[in-house]
Length: 339
Image (cartoon, rainbow, N blue to C red):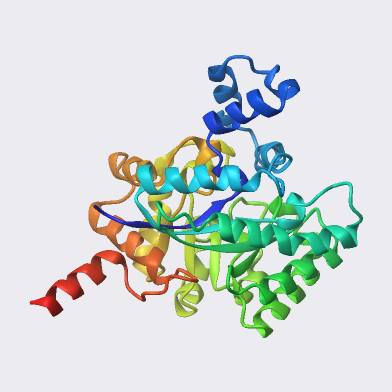
């Protein structure tokens, strides 16, 4: 079977609606009472939103139930689905550890508890019957103070057995007033040899070329080929790839039609910029990675040759893939060696 890599998937957005609804039914009767029937909950959970900010509010629904006690429950089901239904060989999970800590604690106590969260996510992701190579990307957040975001970077540097990089999350238009702060944190991360990615150029409100020099990969980045194609040459020279998450742009109102991504792919391929196809929030969308591929193909956004290039790019740009080649290339290499 084909084996895939997903470089941009949020832990909160990875919980499929059926799993979350069942959890509410069993453990949170007040929440479950809002949606007594599953189909009502699925419609609410997966429907398109008008803006990115409105869309991001859904993450708080999941973050509130992903705790020290419940994370193993959710992650086991995430890994099972990713292996059985998506044929994933490699997965990078990104999330803000502070938002999984106990809200009754002080800020310093919550900062200390973040290390436990990273350990739980790391250990719970190693499921013997679903042998996916996994690593974590820790997200700073626009809603969090500098002290907490710096602690997240420090934690990433101290947990390289489980963590492969850092990111910044939250509504992208909130970055502007704190740009110097985030640039300083990215510089700090790079000084400790941390891999970096970031949510930029996703919407027209989140276009910050001053942040690009500090990123090894670009989270989303679709506005670069759409609105700022003059930057593609620099992106190609820096060997940065775009983490394109097709369904997200329909759910957030960023794009009206998937076909609008054709210009993104065409311009990037022409400029020599790698693209990876990712899910972002596979559960929140109820769309798994193979269906992202199929939708792009059937709607003539890309062809099969371009799809293969994107699939290979995902392994080539993976922060923690230990083999250096996509699985198909490894298999072919091993067959040639054995013959």
